[in-house]
Amino acid sequence: MRGLFASACLLLASVPAVLGASSAGCGKAKTLTNKQYSMQVNGKNRNYFLNIPDNYDNSHPYRLVFTWHQLGGSAQKIVNGEDPNKGGALPYYGLKAIANNSAIFVVPDGLSAGWGNQGGEDVTFFDQLVKTVEADLCVDTNLRFSTGFSYGGAMSYALACARPDMIRAVAVISGAQLSGCSGGTKPVAYYGQHGTSDSVLNVSQGRALRDKFVANNGCTKPGSEPAPQGSNSVKTVYSGCKEGYPLTWVIHSGDHNPSQTNQGQSTPFAPGNSWAFFTQFS
Ligand SMILES: *[C@@H]1O[C@H](CO)[C@@H](O)[C@H](O)[C@H]1NC(C)=O
Ligand SMILES: *[C@@H]1O[C@H](CO)[C@@H](O)[C@H](O)[C@H]1NC(C)=O
Image 1 (tube, rainbow, N blue to C red):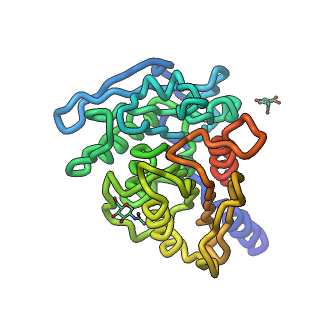
Image 2 (tube, protein in one colour; image 1 turned 60 degrees about the horizontal axis):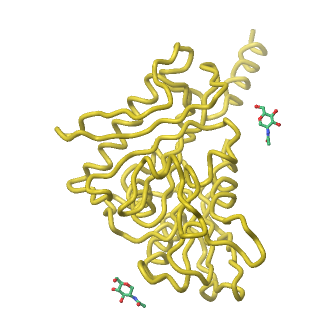
């Protein structure tokens, strides 16, 4: 009896902390599909697109990835993608193509085509999106991610500040603090990318966002500020960060561009870098 009890305890002790990570939508016949939806948030109409894996299986908890557009952009433009050779972002910031049906994408539309987050209304929009999507679809609630370029990076940063317990990791591409930082005291796994020639949001602004999470995540600041190598980007994985809260910084010599490439490459590096950062968590 004693032995049985002891082994039961051992079993319990070995159950990973991710227990209960499945959303309410798991096991349900889904009603949501790949299209544009709207909802009321604080009395305002808000739109978003949803993209669900082709072979969706309601018993499989999926990653949930939020992709926020830039100023003057739209959810439709994120869904369709824009010409990367003209400074546009690939569809779903290039992540859907790499994800191979392993993630559900939420693509919100900003008020006045941006993320001013007045009174926290865009964070509330996020909260309601999580609730609505997860009530219907099977999501791993420990694997929610957020990314965006420029204003979309600012919105991802705002979520890292305000919803650290809901977001596993963010990828902030050429961002700045434009959507606020309510809270901002807890660690969140952080990927940041910025160009030293950024003529819209200068690199100091991107570094300031990064340094907030260098501090929150307990990472060690390198002896000197990482610099690009000519026209190639340099990736720095910070050391000393708290377990589970890594921080990666990619510096390049380019301008304000979500589709920056390294020399001789035609594929932008942000998608591969962000996806590798996100999928280190399972
Ligand atoms: C995509 O996922 C399927 C299984 O869901 C797998 O068989 C296939 O090899 C994957 N493709 C790539 C390119 O990773
Ligand atoms: C970067 O931009 C911010 C905001 O416009 C400005 O306050 C700051 O002086 C700029 N820093 C540099 C080094 O240009």
